[in-house]
Amino acid sequence: MSGKRVAKANLPTRTCTVCQRPFTWRKKWSRVWDEVLYCSDACRRRRQPKSQPITEPRGRE
Ligand SMILES: [Zn+2]
Image (cartoon, rainbow, N blue to C red; front, side, top):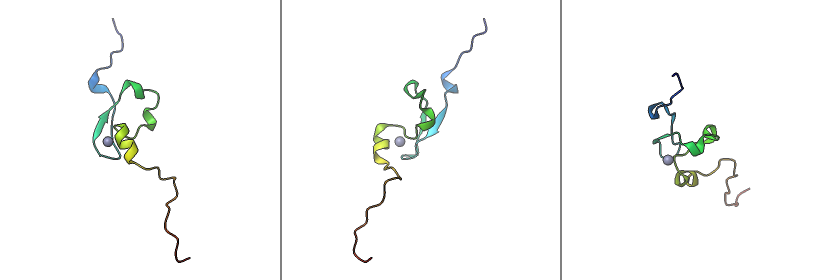
């Protein structure tokens, strides 16, 4: 009887880049864990993608 058994304590954790709170690996993130940066959808929405150009009012150019 030597099966691999993963305890909950061994689950990876990460710090949310928005609220700076640690969150734990979830099963639904098993395939995208490397891409998960936020603890929740709310934080993901708060964070605006940096790739978007900043729109500034044009006046003196
Ligand atoms: Zn968060």
